[in-house]
Length: 69
Image 1 (cartoon, rainbow, N blue to C red):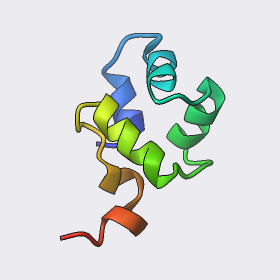
Image 2: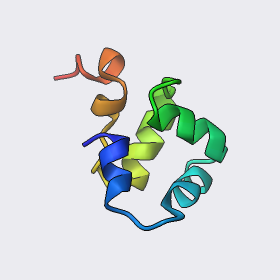
Image 3: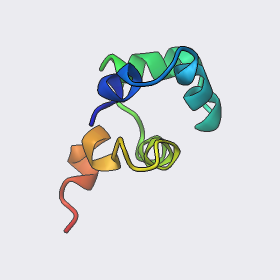
Image 4: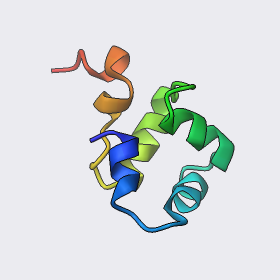
């Protein structure tokens, strides 16, 4: 599941809550969600934890985490 799909099932304000949880601005998170910015490896891990594995680090950064076995 990607971030767009993840937020489609959540109530209003969820993006703000996630941004605070992973310690980024709402603007930065919006850029990541819309594909205008690529999250760092650390942020990818933080998002995976915050979404309880619904959005995986592999989904966010296949260039880094997709090669792991």
